[in-house]
Image 1: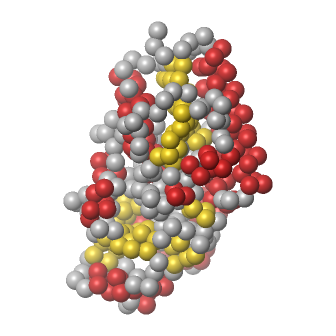
Image 2 (image 1 turned 90 degrees about the horizontal axis):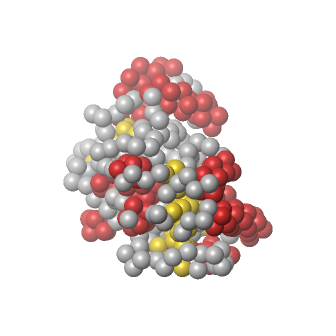
Image 3 (image 1 turned 180 degrees about the vertical axis):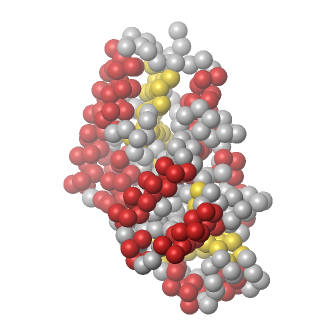
Length: 376
């Protein structure tokens, strides 16, 4: 009978946390520090689910400048009703509007407006329109559900909409009863906890102990099933403490350039992506960013990280902030968070982790390598 394999994905369970708290050393003795996928969770998750890099699966950040592909073109008609602007920037209003837009457009994936200016939406595309975890969710790229279905495996993949405890309970019971060959169990809440409390042992240590207890009970449920098993816990990235902020909107306004005429941008928490629409815009933006703590990525770096595309879907240029420095305000929010990820993957706080009951294959070095092990 096929060995049962359970994979537990704990978002933001970085190598720093693994070392600091000695997480599950007794039952998961085989462990490795893993290079994160350049980008955020919205980049790492499709990479984990497909084994492809952003240049192939198309997900780097939620929003891209793409006037011809924007699903929001008709929102131009709402422009007269988007006053006063301060009302539409309120968090609760944004949250409810996000839910409404998601329903209207039939998006089945995760969707949030965050702090993206509403008047820019008709010129932007959104990458996660479909649920990434279900069969066909990353089409035309195959995802984990596609491959396990093709392999004829009895499998279960967590529903990201459910509470962690519900996802765990469902998977544990199915594994204990011998009903599965493969399980992918997703714990997402640790990411938010770290964003607010990175470095605070009094908050993180008890939560880590809870996760350890939960995963330990899963280990014993697998033992009770009577089948040979393999249990692996992995993450997508770590978390870097806040060390400072950069005000990109103020710098760009001072440059005299006009968004949508001279240039377009998508300003995330750690990187600013630009599309040059008129000659001279590149030089003026570079001058505006000259004193910022960070650097412009070279083509070689983008190719190494799997984020270079000839069609410039992800931008003509990317400015990456130094570790710990956040763009604020940005299209993602108006306040900095105590911790953030999405910096240089070489940043020591950024490394992900792979922990297992079995020796770690030498081929598992990056987040993109997980997929081959889950489908092997």
